[in-house]
Image 1 (spheres, each protein chain N blue to C red):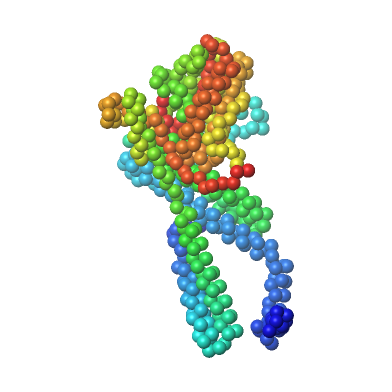
Image 2: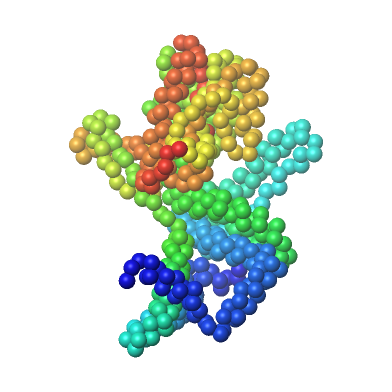
Length: 135
Length: 380
């Protein structure tokens, strides 16, 4: 795990990319050749080339997508945090993005409606849960 | 042509299908070679697959660890305004370790542990002051928490790397297997610390602060006074009882010493406390709802155990009953920015506390309510 390998965590290796694209090119060639073989009446050869072509395209696409997915997974998510500001006097509510220095029960800018002091009453992130099976 | 003729002609075609013709022996030979290779080298192949999996996770851990270090350095530069580049100081900080006291003779080990932890905390505070001279008390606490999260990530990475390299060196299936088996849990924890880093750097409330939030909601609007160590207490009338609401002093990242605070209040009232109610975030089991509120007995407080020990000592002396209200969440939610479900559960926890007070005490009684947990991003 040398320092030079740090880029490997975020970039796709060019060697892997080259292999993927060569496989893809060969597979596409096989597909084209299968059409040629079919027109010349070589149905068995056309069948084999078609099979090889489809398998090659599927495999290289899968590997490419998996590599991309790995990079996406490596990013540290920064969820959106919302700050709720309330006026205790008139009940005016303002929801905005979190700003550095915000904390729960901090007195902030005066109320736009009654000019009384407003208070941060909530700071949280909202996460949309995927539907789960209830057991 | 009827169906039976078509079927028999298809059957003939299938049985006579020989794609390689005279070269079919190559396929047979290949099959036997693969079979024999798997008999002798199956375990080794399995080991290499496992090593590859650990290696992939190790790359991810390295990325997370490096990001953590970067965030810590950037935050120090932004908030602390140091005169010199803090990189070398941060790198030194990340390698800090704490040796736990010897427990061959367990008598008095809690006090030794407390002393070691106090020394550690003082050392951390001093270091943060040195590398971030412009940071105020709240910011310094947040920076300390950020560096601790970066430290945890650095440690996780180094341990996994150790087992990976050891497994590679010795080619021992059992070393590789044990690290590969716990890897999903380790990765979960590392990801949780990664999301905690930004929360600490920005001073956002985290899931662990559920107890502190409940206490803050109860004491808000009442005068709070400082109690040892790094805690605040407010006298709040609830349902005709006098309650002493305790929490760590916010809004900086701080857990305080609720054990000392509870002892102080008990001593001030000469032990005449009807009950103690502790509120804290607790780890939920898979399948349980996030933010679910549950009730029980005992000192609900995490950490190395010093505060739990002190609370138990104090209540035993005066035979004070202790109740616990917990807010359930998983490790990822505990150290990452507070989720709405946890924030909303604070009101449910307050309702439960009031219910306990009504059921377990009489009017005019004195009650201690202690909200444990990190109070980052939560004032009072």
